[in-house]
Length: 179
Image 1: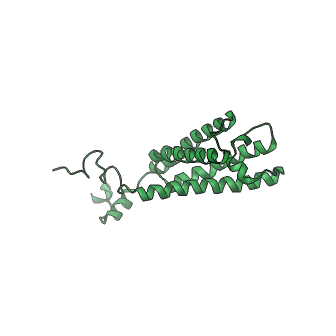
Image 2 (image 1 turned 90 degrees about the vertical axis):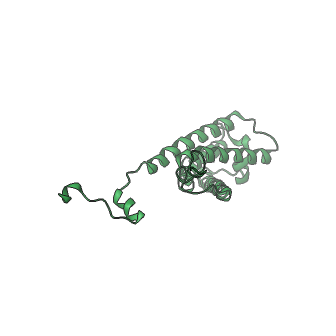
Image 3 (image 1 turned 45 degrees about the vertical axis):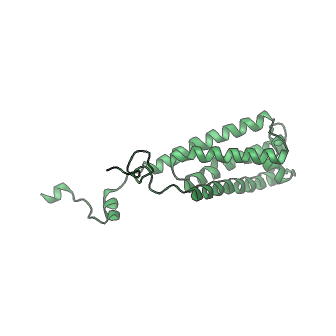
């Protein structure tokens, strides 16, 4: 008799090591969002200090009109956003989410929430083409980089000795040593 936990798509342990947990997913979303904004804020501070930019940090975090390559504050904002996404947010996704097949979901959620925050701050949907291009490029880059890094962790060689020890059994013996 097949029960729902052993059937394909039934949410059993064969397809997922842990049960579906909306609370865990919400916490992961919040943690990724927090890591992104904290990283963006810290990188902005560093870039602003090195370029002498005096635009308020809150505006740089959420004002889509600042995304331009024609001014120092605009370039500083784009640079900080890109560094925060490519380095810190990707690392946060790898450690907080840890599964390559989930990276896309969490990345899209991150950028949708950032779009919402930017729209609320500006009072309208961002209209600047540069903001859209930078956000689209970074969402694709974070997704690809996060998936590649997670896949590297997922595809690491697994030692059968460690698997057997974890399962409570003896490690497999070398066939030649038994003869």
